[in-house]
Length: 224
Ligand SMILES: Cc1cc2nc3c(=O)[nH]c(=O)nc-3n(C[C@H](O)[C@H](O)[C@H](O)COP(=O)(O)OP(=O)(O)OC[C@H]3O[C@@H](n4cnc5c(N)ncnc54)[C@H](O)[C@@H]3O)c2cc1C
Image (cartoon, rainbow, N blue to C red; front, side):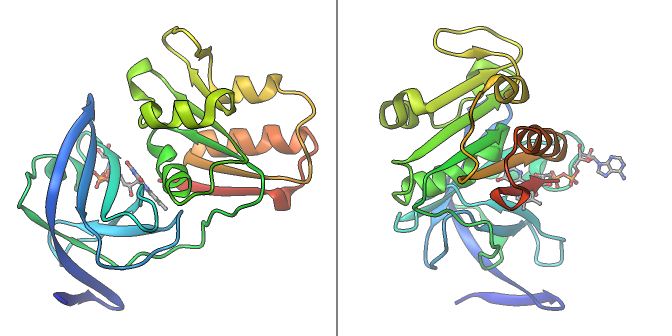
């Protein structure tokens, strides 16, 4: 195994890209071969050099998938993502081991995501946990419902797409938060998994709490 220790307690491993495709404007799906185990919902660190500070990314693959998929968007002026997006198949980059306690379960639950925050739920779904879940995904534009081609047939009406800036058939027109506000009789004994930017996560959490969901049933992963 090709590992280096660049910073205290951070071990990086070099991996080779299988593909790095732009699946929507400025949004990429990066794939490389899996040679480790992980739990659905976990993240790994990514860097272009082992001396860089790693950025964290949710794994979007199922636990037994052959490849690791990472869904990311380019942050203009960012240290990693504009450069990461230029890499091609065969190029190499550095990853940490997977880690994190944001884990899915087989219990019924709500999965609520914004933007690339859909990634851990895709991992959980691809790991066989999707059957009793309600998946709510928010985005600004209709082209940002990543993985909808596989999610739609499997989830059917349990898959809700909320689009704030464009209207489309079968799509709720408005933000995820607006959709949540309108929901009635949310079960209090289920978990509500949230994933996305800080603002979305905090707003969704507050709406759930105002609807009587116990704090302990809100499980959040914030992308910052
Ligand atoms: C647990 C976790 C999981 C995550 N999973 C994902 C995921 O699956 N997919 C995903 O896309 N992202 C994910 N993220 C976010 C990801 O880790 C990075 O933060 C993101 O990709 C930005 O990386 P970057 O190096 O390109 O940008 P950064 O260099 O971190 O910059 C981010 C933004 O801040 C601006 N900026 C930087 N420095 C300054 C400054 N000094 N003053 C003002 N502005 C500044 C930049 O211009 C840029 O727009 C996750 C984050 C966490 C914490």
